[in-house]
Image 1: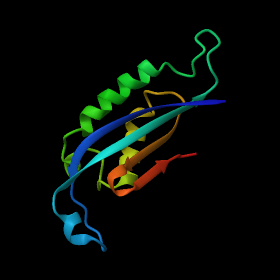
Image 2: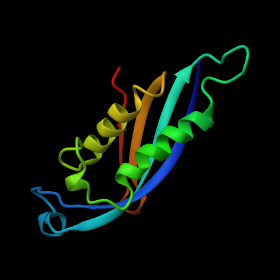
Image 3: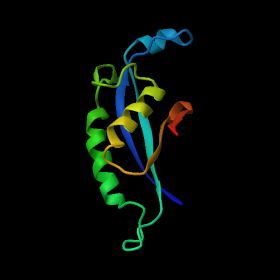
Image 4: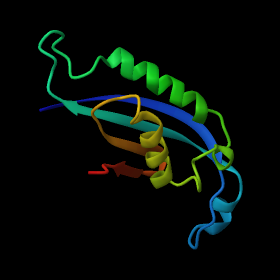
Length: 120
């Protein structure tokens, strides 16, 4: 079994209601998010690839358009703009289009936060 992945980033703003670090979080603020989608499977004997990364990039770029330079609080289907919900949103958007999708990771490098979503 092999696992391939594609990374991408997007810049976006959001608000967040929370109990700790609440003042800064409830104001509109932004982050650079780094995401990675992983695809798992056996390489196709004819192509030698689990899945053509060009196809993965095409789907990721279409998804990125929904997030990059947007106010995440207003992205349809996202819900509260947490790392957890971003992972789930990316999963739900890409799973029907990318067979073998096995994990989604979203990070904010500048502050050291990371979430990995593996539904199985």
